[in-house]
Image (tube, rainbow, N blue to C red):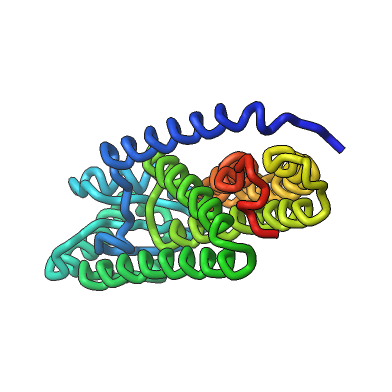
Amino acid sequence: MRNIPFNKYRKIGVFTSAFVILFSVLVVLVNGFNFSIDFTGGIVMEFKQKGDEVTPAGVRESLKNLRIQDYSVQSSGDVMIVRIGLKDQTEASNLVQRVKERLIYDFEKTALEFIKIDFVSPQISKELGAKAVFAVLISLISILLYIGMRFELRYSLGAILALLHDVILTLGFISVFSLSFDISTIAAILTVVGYSINDSVVIFDRIRENFKLSQKNISCAAIIEKSLNATLSRTIITSTTTLIAIFAIILIGGSILRPFALIIFFGIFVGTISSIFISPITLYNKKRDSIKK
């Protein structure tokens, strides 16, 4: 079993995390998020092509010629997905017709088949945003209640710190790279939260077990360090295998799945770090009797 002196690096880990959290908050406040039409309202158009003449770059150039400002283009196989931000529903029909005519004109040698045209109104976008926030809050509260009942309040505080650490850093990552913030982003954040708390529960369980088995003269810090070393192999193996699978999605998943996979990849990475350095922080105490067995 490894014997890494986690106590020695504990303060460095905490200060580093605090600095990165502050940086993430500042980035979010300055840059904000690249909200998709799921939260802003707009048009979604999907069309198929016969051949490979139509490229995302070519479609972007066509939309640029129409002087459309807020749009994104993604491809998935032979299907091209165009998202256009639009707050006024009365302009939707006219804009859709203009886009269709322009694409057909610019790619006249390719048969285009429009398979889906949807409009998301600003009101629906607001409702989706409210439901997304509600889903995240309910998930976090449920997780913390479970930790509180499964262990005790001190463990729950550690879990809160770890979850805040992971969520804030993940939001900062999304903001820095201007990744599209849509419903799938919320799903990715919830996935990160679930993975992070799973790691924390494993470590908490080993710490509690070692408190029961260890002698009275062993300090709290020593027991926590022993528990972290005991679970380190499991943490590294689980995280590494998961990251390999996510990395494969990043490479071959295409432009639609890649942002989702990138968020999960980053979130799992920082979640692994927080499980080791952040979640046990509230358990450090010179008096062992202050922590229930």
